[in-house]
Image (cartoon, rainbow, N blue to C red; front, side, top):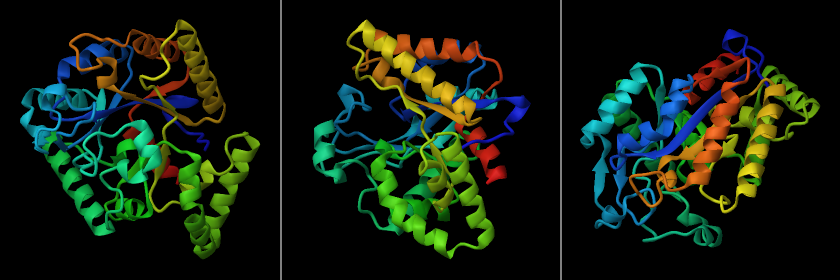
Length: 329
């Protein structure tokens, strides 16, 4: 989806989103990871878990995993709260809602192969009634707003999982969604989106058709931008996920960086936005004091260094992108 009026005459907006910030997060790790990016003027959107349940997942420190399902309120990590509030005040960061518990009590430990075989292992929101989803979103949003004294406008679904109940609940809680877009998500909502299109007034149909034609001409996926307009709540797609996988050789580092650059240039041509998604704890696997995933950090540094040298890039937060898009929606 293309936009033509980014601030300061920019041709592309660029944001970093870091997931799984919670009670367990040491602020020193965030400072170590993003210090140079902040020095270069970048901003970071921290996807934050209000009440993190101590599951067996890697986003929980080894010594706390499976701690009888105990829930940890982020406000009790006062050092982290002070750190994040300072970054928000200095406009170096913003806060996104990243689930409520970010748990999954259906399984003690979930692997990638498990989630493929059984989708209900993906998310705390799987198969929940809309009212339950809505209640968790409202409570999480209210808690984070009270703790950080800032407005929460964007929801980042845990494990990139979305369903119809979640979309409806997001609409009713006035939250936008920032998620990865994939073929499964497109299939899941295409039928519903088609019905909404048929029911919509002519003026809105004309807007959707315009964006569909624009995406075709720019050679972007023909469904993704139009679907974003058909969904009941504003939808921001993740552009690139920098995970811990595939960093086993230097050749892979080079390949991943080239992949990023191509995606960045394509989106810049469309005058669109780029959201880089990371998980801070994967750089320190498995919760070591130092950064253990050297090649992952190398790619991150290459990305930040490259973008810093580009002209007409608006360094912003995910919430900033939403604000601009909402005015043009």
